[in-house]
Figure 1 (cartoon, rainbow, N blue to C red):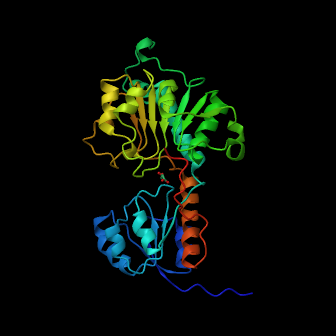
Figure 2: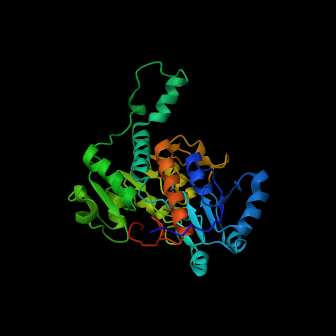
Figure 3: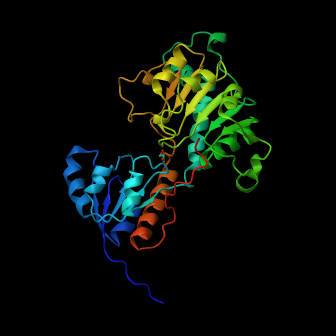
Length: 336
Ligand code: DGY
């Protein structure tokens, strides 16, 4: 049986794709590459948007206003798992398919979470800087000691695929009891049998009271925006460490700073911020007990390529009228 050739459509690539993935799109469709974050490319982006049937990219908000400038749009393929850059209601109202990249980045983001967890607990960045600055002039004393990671209690806010990958590292590799808080308990027997008896669903207040390290992996939505606030920090165990690798705006950053400066939060490791790139004026950039990273959770060669490949497959399928491999469906469960 021969398949009908797919009608050539207009595709707008709004964030650079690896050459092999760009070639897959160009083989079938008319492709414009224009990054709207570069002022010089904005006119080309706007012009291509007006004719686009498909969009593919990431890290740029496709607002409802922009959507209104794309009357022919059929599908958006985000090169990300998070979909907070898209107007979900407007997409649904117009029947535009939204695809994303779950599943291919979980282990890589979990590695990055662990890098932050180790760096904050053992003060890796600060002490390395001391050596670089020529300040290692005698054996370090207690004032510069860190805290253990192994055996400490880990509290996870959000327990989707990435949370479960972090929990596996913690429970199986570091002997850490794992608590998690999510909208509903995860069926570990079906989804993560290796965590049976090792990860426990608990109410938020209980998690905060008991966890030595609290890791937020929350998607950004109306129900999670600003969720990690002064009350949450006040509920944490004295000397706790806080890591955020979900979305910056789930945390009230002023409250985080207050917890570091006037509360008993020991340190924070942050891969995400309310505004990215982090403004130079943000006190989080230089705070001595904050380890900031430039949103590198999934940023390895292998994983970013896998994300681009899945996003390309999604868009090709959507524009061919097939069900894409990874359509975004608001499911709930993993968030709080
Ligand atoms: C995602 O995929 O949403 C990540 O935040 C990108 O690193």
